[in-house]
Image 1 (cartoon, rainbow over the protein chains, first blue to last red):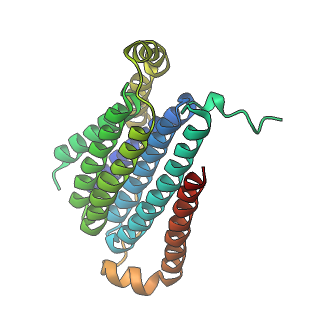
Image 2: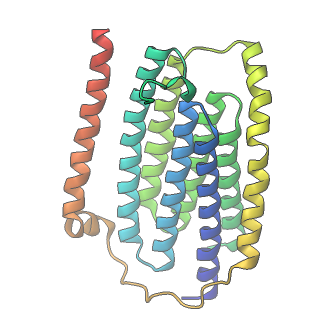
Image 3: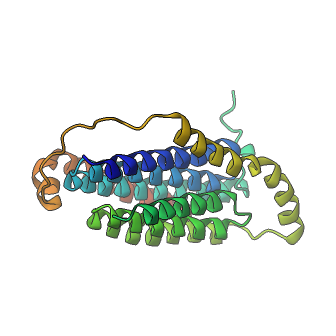
Length: 106
Length: 163
């Protein structure tokens, strides 16, 4: 393990944490359902970057690539199902705002 | 691997993610996300993960962007007055985000110590062998997930037709 690789791992870790912060901020602050999905996508990108950087640094790219591909596949289906739900919610409430989703309030 | 170029790419990735989150129009946000996927695919390729990079490029930058654009086009278009009033509110909400992200990055870079040692690297293998021989149970789960996803989409579209 040389110094450049440790530096790269550290730098990638900093950017992973920054992307996680951006994604969580978007999910917490936004009221728009599509924007919440965009925040979820940013979180997924942070995780993919973390897996690939870890695989590169430990020289085990085969396993990290297969895990990254799994994450990407899961991500696609989460987004596809969530997009279908968003469209159904929009057709029912005529709005993309989470403020209008009050039906389940006790 | 060139050290400075990778840092620039990671910075561009963070900026495009910020743009995706802060863009006033949803269509620009979707395009920002696609740009972030493209930059991430370049980073992945440079980190020795070409198969995962191709998946990221084709699926995340292509398919997911198409899904987002379809959903945005199905929602109603806003008037200029609505966009202006929303922009004022959005500015208050999202103004601290770039500063907070930059401060977080600087603090993490300055405060935390670099790792002294890492576990011994494993022998480099073939991604196809790992995928098909080592992770068979995961692969089964993945196939089930794809089927569940396809079933979910069918169910969601079926409910529209009834209405």
